[in-house]
Picture (cartoon, rainbow, N blue to C red):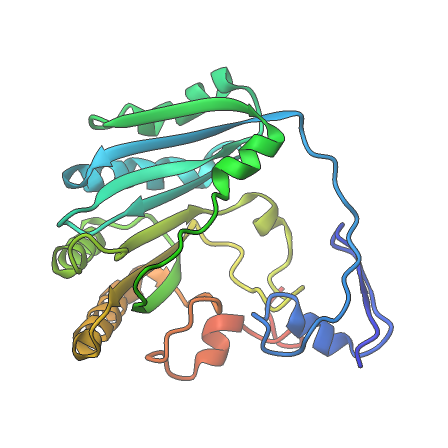
Length: 269
């Protein structure tokens, strides 16, 4: 049994099994089972600003280029995710949260919202409980089960035209009107302020996080969808760093360092 105490401030007091505690913080549940948590609750703001901007699919390249230039250096109070669906039936959606007033959010978002011709633009200041409900709507009840192949990485630089061409090829082949697509998340902020070797979550210095997936319902479609995702990974490899453990890809060989980086005793300072 691990008898350790973790403070949410980032300071850790070890009472034993320090290596196992290190592994379990970011290890994706692969190293142990937590039986008890004790949280120090942080005071929430009274209000915050949420936003959702939607563009037609054929504008994804210009939106992505603007987002990648903007997201890594935007105010750390602003979180942003960018979703790009399949060519057939998909669109481009940017949404997130700003811990500040609506007027300031509008100003900060302008480098991206001024690109292309959005079909929907929602920017709302809400009481914080409603912010949580807006961002974490209940999952829909699925009427039909499906399988999914995911892969992921951390962007070492903005995707150049060659990488965006790989994305386009993927999105053109992905299943129509499905959950297939690319998902980007801005990085930096509190994530980058923790040492890569402090926990089992290593990839803290990237520009952004990216994942892509392709779903299928019929088992006969499994092979082509798995191949599509993994082929895309090989082509994107020059532009990404490793992968995220919560998005496992069995096509990755020798996956330990890919997910966890180097061990604490061998990690570079």
